[in-house]
Length: 363
Figure 1 (spheres, rainbow, N blue to C red):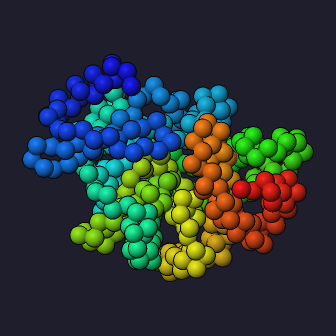
Figure 2 (cartoon, helix red, strand yellow):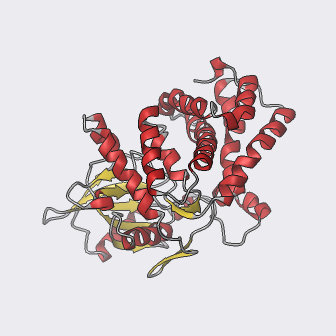
Figure 3 (cartoon, rainbow, N blue to C red):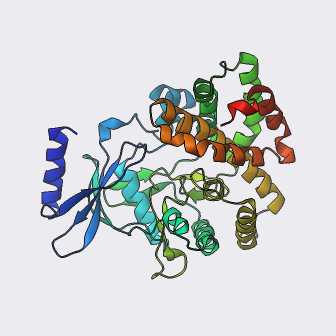
């Protein structure tokens, strides 16, 4: 990290009255963000988030055309927030206003890409379950968060002081560019020949109705990365507030199924078909306004689209960039994808994968 960036961080911490804290670097992920835990002299702890603004491509302005978004790069096309501190701060405020447990914002500098957050602890779902805690009660609480989140119609803009962020729609283009990353990255990773123009045309024709339904159903606030490594268990709190929420800055207005596809087909841990089914039943018992058959069809289709995106953009791309640890998650994600393709509504896409991606290339 450059000395200029370190200097900016030091100035920010001094202005926030946190320059005497002991700084502990936390393990990172594949993003351009980094986190530190600050240990204060009085024994309390907070989290320091660093998102260098120049590390990402441009975000999507409201009203941008599809062509403009594609020209601006993947973040704009897919409607990702590029780690924006404004997005994080505004979204955290929205979640807190709705009785949910997002970290309180202690200090922030949007231009610098820096923020200090409440430390919600280390009780990640993924960690607790690996240590033996019963998973079903945790998943039930996470589903209840979704129900609560979806009770209110989301606003067009999220506002918290100087943090103003548009809540855009997870639209057809965003769904398409994400799913299409499979076409680009999986052949490079697996050793398959590039897909033919005919195969790509068939792919577009088969997926198009899924993406259109995804946009048509985009009616609720959506975390967008809602899974066991972004959820914390806070048993001292009550109701839905027992679930701590992290990494929500890419939030959009999306289909009610979208966050559930991440939660119940978690690429980083096994979620059994039995638990998945029970949690979908719980969700639909609360969302009596939804047609269960239509919802389940949309859920399977969007989950398949998401699995293709994860295999391409997240796992194959990262593995080719040298982050080989992502290969361990690939077989699980293929199992989820193949589970979704068993839905009768997915017959055409199942046949596409059977023709173009042989079993030995699914690893």
